[in-house]
Image 1 (cartoon, rainbow, N blue to C red):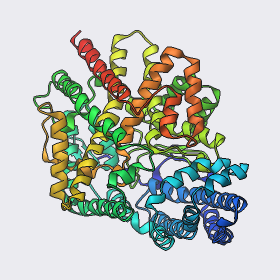
Image 2 (image 1 turned 180 degrees about the vertical axis):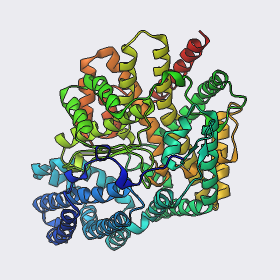
Image 3 (image 1 turned 90 degrees about the vertical axis):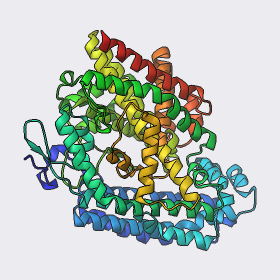
Image 4 (image 1 turned 135 degrees about the horizontal axis):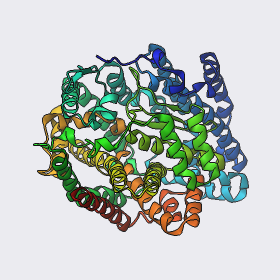
Length: 601
């Protein structure tokens, strides 16, 4: 049986180089201590922000400097934990930095409380009086919008000091998932046994063309999920209860209203994305599932068959290096500065792409302000991994450009825009691959890669968003969130979407256990929002060329200095309307139409 590697067995070139953040653990320790020693210098401004604009500017600049340093320190600890969650040193250091973040947040909570306590119009007058405050205009304006939901200063300080405790559900979920769960091996059609893990199942076996291996791995995966369902349900229920309590404590109409405020998104915009895609996309995806079943010769289309490649023989293995070269060529359209970021990411070990025991599942990009990005993926040697890499490079390119053009306070846009630059790269990669040949089989294969992209964002994550809506509704009605209840809700979500096109087994209803996004507020639906915007923007780029590319780069460089609706309008997309959503769904339908014709031919 093939064995998974421990972290110390992974080749150096397959690991990210965290020495760029801190050369050694001693340097990290020293910086953590230094940050704690800096806090009193900011506390000198306590009870003085009413004295004038000069005091406010000096205080905000001092606070910003601490946040930059603590973000780098926290990122280092959390990246170490992501590369190997079984390592007790990484676990301890992540907990330590979490404690420091909570302490600093509690100590500095006076800043928001004092600013909001100023008489109406004071902050606006400060902005006029002190030009240096212009960089903080948006963050101050955003802060004023939270005033009706702000608690008294002492309560805010207590809540800030409990930051690490309030994040405990996500920590427990990830620790259980990455360090404690084990899976029995799966046997393929030739009798070879293969190791199973969260990362291997989702990145490899779920996409396997070997039906025996794919289904065996799924059964192994589902059995372990079943064994942990009550524990995971208790953890998730705690997370939801926390959000419900906080929304009521702060006087929000609902938890959804609370979670959408920092995204700067209306309830209507949120529901448009969820409802339009969920209802209008379902018929197209059912056709796609039936096409797969027919072409693959499956008697039953099981839930675990949904990711099966339709043309596996035309998807040869691809190395990380070769995929990187293709991605660089595909993204040259975005100009020399962007291309240089991509080249650095691939050549200078910004990417951790090995599989090892304890490594975080899925993929992400972390970009601590003042440093370069770090990307985590698990390389599966197929083109799907290349699209995932292009996606994460999209986050890196976006946030690196933003950090070069904005100061920390305006660096990061809200969640509603954050997935647009990443999905744009997937669309550009697909376009590039199509343009390389007139081969109809290649065209068909590229369309299948695009369908994987839309499936990931418009199905997987969108249905997570649908699940969240049902969970919050149940919790706000004071219904207990047991494993049985959560599985029932997830089963309903999947059944309503797939109809009779897919046979759902009990393991499908455990899908709520598989993603960490449920612990990140209303994050899941933003994948669909981002892909909707990038679909429209990519179409505009194809029609207009360089002027549209220039506007896209302008939006990336704007970072969080503009609201998400304004960022999207900058590139010609109005997400306050239903039309971009319907157009994106129709585009997916056209891809299914084309696949049906190509396979029929």
